[in-house]
Amino acid sequence: MKQSSTFILFLAYLSFASLNIFAQGSDVDILKWQQELNKEYADKFKSPLSDEDRVVFNGHSFFAIDTAYTVNAHIILSKTTNDIPFATSTNRVAMHKEYGTLNFIIKDQKYSLIAYQSVDLMKTKEYANYLFLPFTDETSGEETYGGGRYIDLKIPAKGNTIIIDFNKSYNPYCAYSKKFSCPKVPTENNLATKILAGMKFINKH
Image 1 (cartoon, rainbow, N blue to C red):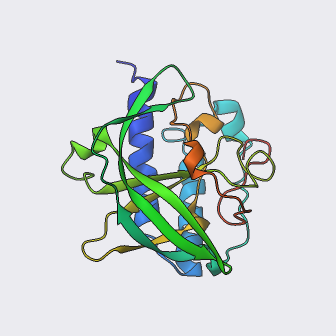
Image 2 (tube, helix red, strand yellow; image 1 turned 30 degrees about the horizontal axis):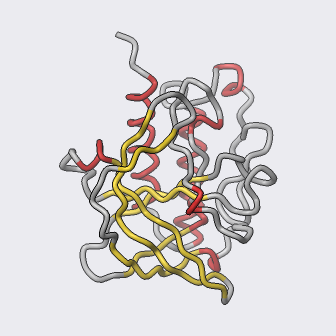
């Protein structure tokens, strides 16, 4: 039976989440994450690339690793409990819940992003505490994908802080193929700065 693009995207999300969450912080860990990501895109069974693009794929372009973009964020939990419909790159609507606002500092400037939880993932035992952090910035449509990038996080076991590593921000699968349905970045999550970290978007990869 042929898998639906929505189900494939769900599996892709889990794959990215596993790579992101368990590779925290150091240059070595970030390089390992980049290598694993390139390996996944080169794998004909996992790659979102067409066969034609995959054959010539030589690895993604990334910004130079910069720990200034690995930040500690203060969490302000949301009081909103309603499901929030996210428009996607297709006609599908992706339902999320607002987890909270993440406040952080990059190069002496204050910023904030809203983190979300996928309603579908919240129903699973293994991924119920995963967070979805989509964002755009002043590189979007220039050095990076115009539709924005994603970061996967995990709800901290305790406390009200969380690490955001923009060096592990990645492009959604729909940047590479129209068969995938990806949530669009809410306007509230546009950063008025250039995030010169993470995955670029040049000639598809």
